[in-house]
Length: 444
Image (tube, rainbow, N blue to C red; front, side, top):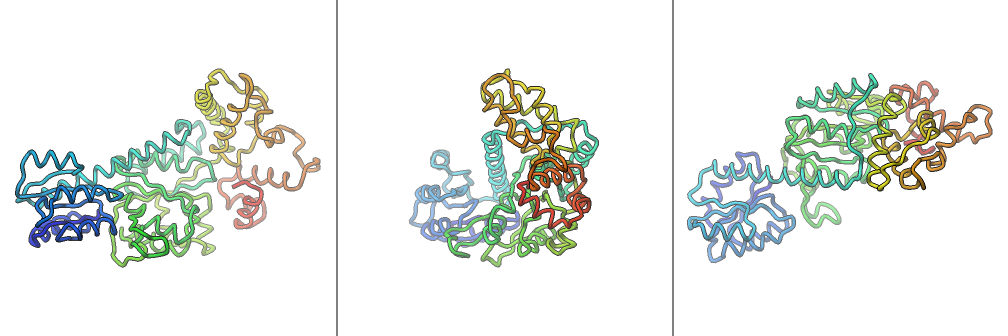
């Protein structure tokens, strides 16, 4: 954490700084109220040690000003004039804790541990609120398919270790769900689970989101930002679709994995973070590394434990149970508890290739539950491609477009292959061409 020490006595600042830095945190100092408030507003701190008797300034008044900074730091007051009334008033105004002088280094370390724990709990609450707001069905981590059972066994066994984990699988196979479950089953379960979606931002913004940035480091950087690595300290950092991570950022991630060190954008100060990395990709990272589109040393560092999630098409024994679970969930939300699948819908589900996997299954069922006019979901309530999939005429020589025929052929080959590299070999094209075709046909 970043800690600010505010006291008009240099010896107190020095003693506190030693205790703070010996706990693995970074410390800054301020000798008066004006400097303290300015530093808090411009730099941002996780915690502030504030002397209640600060020269001519009133520590309680300074506390009020610090509590207006966003995000507000945890303010710990210490003073030689400790009494119950002052402590109660300080807590009422938002102080995190209260330490009387003289204090010991252990008291400083103890209160910093409490601040870190409070931050971790806050992040967990935010994650739980995000889960509740996502409107997703309950996680189903059961399977009757050997390939999926094997993947789950590896994941749950590795979860208890500190090893980095790489989850491979097509889009929508449940990689992020499994990553979160790995975190819940690890020794870091009480700390934060932080997600970084690698394809979502430009290189500059992604680097800032990942490692943080200093104020003024680029246009629009009006304040200091800690970054997702700092937020995940002590917990798990989930890098979703890491195959999209720009090559320029990959050496910095490699440094974090090897040395547990990183630097914020626009800053030369090395920072430390204890994070367990779980990464996921829908690409064949071994092929990407061989083609120099992904750093080979980073791939081997991530590939300590590799888990391949099969597509939904490869899990026919699970399809009915997963579909019924999603139907019950969305029916309950929509107030249609009696709604059921017709026989034709069940047949269409079984013959469809599910290129979007579990994500597509849930979306299709949610849509059908909402649109079905009665108590039965019919084929007409599903997207058009399900009517096509249920027709036996989608074959060579049928009166369909080449794009539709090619899309269905690619869907089926990818679904029946163990990896995209294997699917590309079957199709007689290289993985990059397969990726472009899937993107063009809307199969990603």
